[in-house]
Amino acid sequence: MLQNKVVLAFILVSLILLVDFLFLTMLRRIMTNNKRWTRILVLSTAFGTTLFAIATVVMYYQADMLGIEEGISQWNITALLVIYGTKAIPVATTIVQDTTLVVAHIIAAIRKKRTPSGEALPKMTRADFLEKAALATAALPFAASVFGISYGAYDYRILRRTIHLPNLPQAFDGIRIGQISDIHCNPAYYRSRIRSGIELFMQEKPDVIFFTGDLVNYRTSELYEFADMLRLMRAPMGVFSVTGNHDYGDYISWPTEEAKRKNFEDFIQAHREVGFDLLMNEHRFLETGGEKIAILGVENWGKGRFPKIGRLDLAYPGTEEAPVKLLLSHDPSHWDAIVRPDFPDIDVMFAGHTHGFQMGIEIGDFRWSPAKYSYVQWADLYREGSQYLYVNRGFGCLGFLGRIGMPPELTIIELKKA
Image (cartoon, rainbow, N blue to C red; front, top):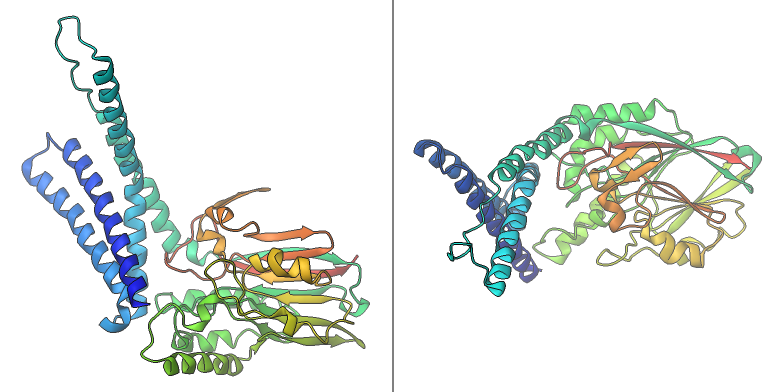
């Protein structure tokens, strides 16, 4: 674990130094004609961001050892992402222009071109205007980031969808399911605004609530100051939850395995205390009017490096005769990998995890986010044959404490008899 952290920290610091070298090179070129004190001030500020970035990387990977509070660490990470998101455009411009210059000189050398006077080909002039324009354009990602942090992260949206199921018992026709996912309890949040989001959710008066994982970031203690808000979530048919990849304490170093085990035991107990029925590879039944449907919940199952603890083969037995089966599983990749091929009678799976990358564009039916390059199903409702998957865009934030074009989501899904 420690060795992996050292390698990752080294890679990140190397990238930071490379980006900042290119950025400082561009600034020096642009500011050649500026006054000396102006150049010193600007370049010193830019160099200061390099030191801040390196310190943030060290803090992130050694937060426990240094005793740094998570809220401080998360804000530093957010600042780092804003700074380097802002530098991205001018640095990319510098790379393109320098590459063009090098290629042009190589071609000239190969062809041994000469000017009419017989002198060597003069150096290509750099496109100063484009570099300055790129620097000005850098204000756009900076402004978007500030907006995403101050407003976008708390711009809660209620999304309503209807799913028609032919086998839905008449007693459940019109049942309203409220889904919330990826709260990521974080001391860096504005608690009053988090509370307003949960209150907005409860104004919908769902019949049953599903929470689809990632209640915390690193450790159980993060959720304690949010416990009173979590208790606000109540529904006549109950509140059901499952674990996400962040709920196991896998992303920090623990002094002993016993400490990590105790953290997860506390996590399970916290669910009971706030009134969530945590499904750990098991199932429950909802009953009304003498009819019933099944709710299955599994631990996290994710592709690649994510934990594959979910055991649908344990949760499923006993639900065979249920006319409708609803599955809670944090990671949407579970649907294609296990659910559809092996459990074709699971009608709807509810997932989260992707956050919609906390960044994207959604206009009408057009939907794009960097998340689509990692997940086939990354947001909203999907259907294959008679099976459905709903991927919630998430309530909270991770890493970057903001959202740009991908508002935090509260979902109301109504089930109707086809």
